Image (cartoon, rainbow, N blue to C red; front, side, top):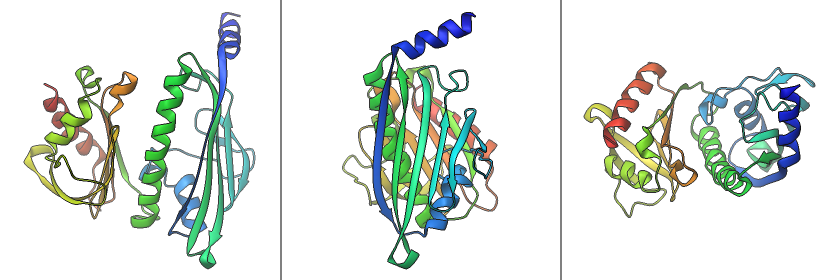
Amino acid sequence: MADEKRHAEKADNGKEFEIPREFEVGASPEQVWDAVTRHTDGWQWPMEYEPKQGGAGPFNSVLTVWDPPHRLTVRSDDPDALPPFQTSNQLDYTIEARDGGARSWVRYVHSGIFVDNWDDYYDGADKHTDFYLHTLRQYVTHFAGRTAAFATLDGPVTSANGDALTAVGRALNLPDGAAAGARVRVQGPDGTTLDTVLDYRNDWFIGLRTDSALYRVFGRGRWGAPVGITVHDFAPDADAERNTADWSVWLTAVFS
């Protein structure tokens, strides 16, 4: 009874949101479909989908539309399976071929219900959406069909501030004026030097790409959270546990 009351209160206090995006990418619909349904470890985080209409998805969700490689809709209305600030979540992908299938047009819509601090949660989701979809495009352009050793880690609580991403950029030895598209040599764990392309940079996120990996830095201080790093490593000898340990030590040292 208490859980039912809590869920009812959350629903009463909730407010719907919708975050739509459209883009084209130089990959076939089949490659995009594979990325969003099978190789999510290559651009977001590992997720599993039961490949059928009505199949199960992450966060106790249901695949309400499964039409490969054209349409995917997955929805969860289970507050216990969702983050504490949500009571409903839906992802919808529409994929259409362009240029005879050499390219794809994608419409993505993230919708649902946020409770409490709606403006902050919407702002965070809106900005994260652009970064995740950019990383999706990087994946299908440079690593399509490949499985990643996925590592994720958070910095110490002292990194939960608005200047944290600047500190990470300096520790990486990123030039202050380097913009997306620049080739840069950055300083990683144990003094290693990485030859990278700076594929994304703004006030909240940094994206780096090598010939064998995608490195994503999330400056979440704006939303009261510590810096996060994900590594999507496609090398034959990739080791997710080693990447997690090495980058954790590196990130902790930045804010020690």
